[in-house]
Image (cartoon, rainbow, N blue to C red; front, side, top):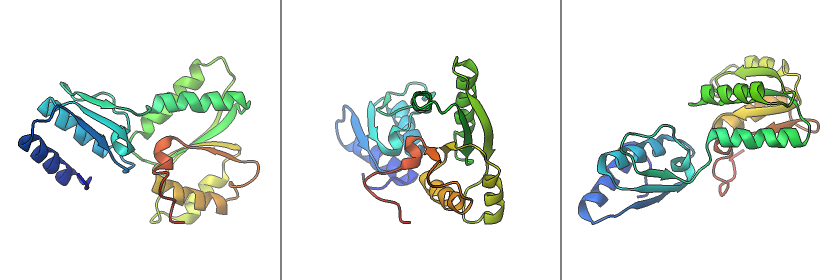
Length: 200
């Protein structure tokens, strides 16, 4: 299967399942979106064929899964990534930070987990600011830079796609938030495919 658009993926996997005796599927992709995972979860729930995803968008952990699904994802959940982020913050005594998110699906969950983690922890966390805005070239650069200039934190936790991160970092550089004295922390979905460097 060499195409991860929804209709082609669905058609190709169903054709394979119909023409062969398949006991399970191991799936790997280099797409950074969870749409592939949702499609595979649906296929597994409808066919009862176990599907194991090992990387890419198919490994973006879904919770909850479809009823009857036998879809195993070898990935790390957002909750687990946030726990690691906070361990790093604690290790370096970076108790004060800001969170920047796009409107990328799951940003509400990301913020909820961060808030619940800071509220329940013994460590004296200071969530200085939360900024949520659309990150795209179509947005007003001056508005984005104005929002970014309001940030006083030197540690910034980001939740967005890889493409949105490229836009965000170009705006942050213009706003003076990139360079010595600033630490940016992102989850794995923002990093994207490590085998293909960003275009800019």
